[in-house]
Every structure is written in C-alpha cells, then in structure tokens.
Amino acid sequence: MRFPRAAGVLAHPTSFPSRYGIGDFGEAAYQFVDFLVASGQSLWQILPLGPTGYADSPYQCFSAFAGNPLLLSPDRLVADGYLPATAVQYAPSFPVHEVDYGPVIAYKNSLFAQAHRHFQQAGTAVQRAAFAQFCQEQAFWLDDFALFMAVKNYHADHEGGVWNTWPTDIARREPVAMQQWSQKLADEIERHKFLQFLFFQQWLALKQYANDRDIKIVGDIPIFVAYDSADVWANRDLFYLHADGSPEFIAGVPPDYFSVTGQRWGNPLYRWSRMAQDDFAWWVKRLQMTFTQADIVRIDHFRGFDAYWEIPAEEPTAMVGRWVKGPGLHFFQKMRDQLGDLPIIAEDLGVITPSVRALRDQFDFPGMKILQFAFGGERNSDFLPHHFGTPNCVVYTGTHDNDTTVGWYRSADEWERDHIRRYLSVDGRNIAWDMVRLAWMSVADTAVATLQDLMRLGGEARMNFPGKVGGYWRWRYTPDMLDDRIQYYLREITDLYGRIPSAQPAPVEVTIEMEEA
Image 1 (cartoon, rainbow, N blue to C red):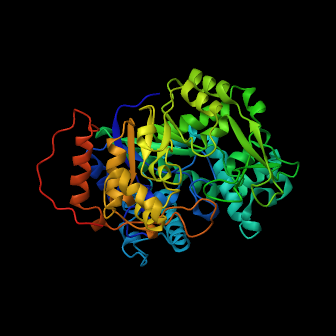
Image 2: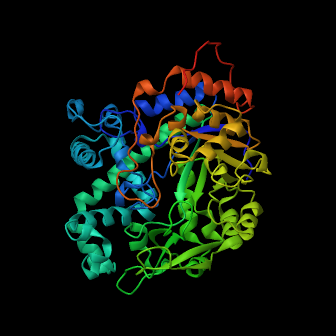
Image 3: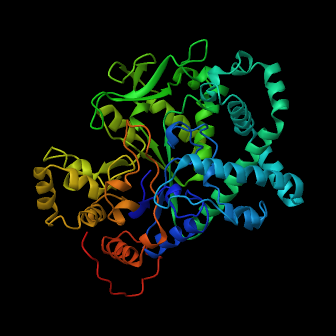
C-alpha cells in the first residue's frame, strides 16, 4: 500500500515529560501532537504499546493485545474521576532525563490499586456501564490476559512467575484449575481488566486528537511474541513447545551488523502450518487490534514471513541455527481477504533475499532505508539516497535501535566521517540536521526522524542497543528541549521538500537563528 509524500517523528510516549517518572498519555503527549501539527508533520511513529516485561523492552510484552498501564496519565485519571486529586498531590522525586523503572512501577501500581478501589466504591453508572461493555467486547483476549497477569503476580517469587513454572494444572489451563484460580484471584483479575479499560480510553482519546489534526499514528509490532506472555500460555498449540511448555525452538537472527554472535531473542516460533488451518485467525485478531491502536503499522523483522532463523532453544547464542521457510504470500493474501487494505511498513533490514523483496513488492509494502547504514563501508550502499530506486520506501535518519546521529557520527572512523561530509557537502558541525535534510529531500514517500536527532543529542540519548540487556528504553526529555527553533526549522524543510499536505495553513513567518551543534 503506497503512502502520500509526508514526514514524521519517531518518539515513544515513555519519553515525554511527566512528574510521575515516565512519559504518559497526559498533557505532554497532547503538546507533542500540537508540535507535530505546527511543524508540518503528518506522522507520529511510536514503539509497541504493550505491557513490558523482560528488561523493560516494548518488544517483549506480556500480551500482543493489551496496553501498558505505565503509560496511563495519573492527571487524566483524576480529571476523569477515577482518582481523587489528593492521590497525586505529592509524587516522588524521579529522574527527569530517564525512566527509573523499578520505583516508577512501584509508585504507579500503588496509584492503580487506589484507582481500582475508588472505582469499586464510587464509580458512576456511566463508568460502570462503559467498563462492562469493554470487558464484553474484548473478552477474547482480555479474560486470558487478566488471569495470566494475576496468576503470574501470585507466583512472582518463583523464577519471576514465568508461566511454565506454575503448578502444572494451571500452566496447562486445566478447566478446574482455571475456575479455581479465577475465583481465588477475582479482585486482581478485575483490576487488570480495569487498567486495560483505562488504557484504551486514554490512548484512543489521544489518537483521536491526533487524527482530528491530520496526524496518523505509525504503530509497531514485532513479528514474534514473548514466551512469557498470555498469548503463548493461552495458545500453546500455535507455538513450537515441549510437553512441559518450554520452547523447542526460538527466534533470532544470525551474526550481523549489530552482533558477531547474532541475536538470540528467545521468542518461541509459530507453528505456521497449524495457524493456516483456520486462515491465521489469531493473526487476524492481532492485526485488527493493531489497526485499532494505530493507522499504519511497521512490522518488525518482516523477512520472517519469507524465512526465519530457527535456533534450538538450548543454544546459548544465535550462531547455531537454520533458515526455515515462512508462510509468505499465502499469509498476506489471507490477511488482505479478511482485513482489506494493509497499511503496513515492512522492516526489511538485515539479510534480505530476492524472495523477501518479491514478497514486500507483491503487496506494495514500503521498505525501510536507514541513512546511518549508507556510510557504513560500502561506497555504493543501497541506503544512499541516489540508490533508493523507488519512492515507495520510508527513510529514517536512524531508529530506536541505532545510536543518535550525533553519537554515531562522533564514534565513526574518520574515513567514514569524510565520506559523509563529502556526500552531503557539509562540515559536520550540524550533522543531525544535515541528515534530517538529506532524508527529507530524498525521493522516499515517507521520511522520519527520531526526536533525539531533532534535538541534536548525543549517545547518552540512545533508546536501545540490540543484543544488550539492561539500561535501555529509558530516555526522556524535558519541556524546554522541544523549543520553537526545532518547530520552525522542521516546518521549513518539510515545506521546502514538498512533505506538507496542501490543506495545512501556511506558518507565520519567524526569523530564528539555529546555533551549531
């Protein structure tokens, strides 16, 4: 599916300013949408919104359907009548430039418990009716997720509560055990459902605010789901698992640009032949949920639909494995038959074969071009803009997996920096915006920059480092960092290179001097 010429910004909600230790769906999120509108943008790209688990990664979530309660805005809970104002009068002193997940989780969980009690005791008839309707409409995933989280928390002291360490009867979802645990943990189960109700209220209201201002949300889903998730626990027959529930094979990629030993992700692999028997019904529901939360979706590791790297679960790295054929053309035909047009961006980075390109092009999915990769060694890299070949692609300065452009440039070899400077005809002193300009002027239909690059930040603002665990997904900014100069110059180049929709009004002329990085 082709997209019109446009531009946008990649920023995950956790990065927004907030006095509660983590960005959320509160005032700063709405101000960010206003910034996008004022700077002529059409797209807001986010990372997966699911409830994070292992190492706080949004790519390892407890559910492919649920939302992350940590993104709930306490201020909105107060405004909507789910918390008394006194509940948020005094918040702990959290870091402002990063998320310290441990204390944030403890604090927000205490607020959520209070909000649930408040709802049980003082919820209005309208609120109760809306909650009941939500639970009924979303029961196909919500019931399993809420029970999963409640049982997981109950067993949290035992190997982190991973579901295959639970008592055998509930791990295997035996009917008697399901009923017993549902009764035993009824209050906590309702609390998890309540938090999902609040999540969808807040996120869909924010999405509507963006859509009403002609900003589309670009969502993101990993092709594979986390092993320790409600999805795997509730659908064991759809995954390659041993009789005890442990993974038989896991996902990853062989040695590549990011890691000499490859990336051992640990996600269980799908039994695609089993999924095909009901026309991939689970995937249909997953994509329906994704398109509820976003207007466009980037599928991470798109090449896995053509072929994926199968690693025996007992292997400590991704060096030992084999390529296995994926569901390919048949899968996307079934998705299109059941869902209609598929506004999908194919993350087609890494080892890409002619068959992967053919699958991508068969459905007109735009692929990705990363400008940082253009200068990584090859003088004729496909990531250099004069080699894009087709406008049907999305060009990025870098993504959440890359260093910031400033950090990348500073750590590059001198011959590489020389190549960049000569290609762009610049001196390198404002390299982040030089790269943004290069992306915006390219033939690519869609151009996206990270918010860190617009702010010209160094490696300290890097969001993630693939293959490394701990210390990532933490970056946040403060309100003063998103200033008028960024807004003005972003609109200037967006207009200059024809990426502003014609319906948008012209900006007020302002003279602002941009200082060097």
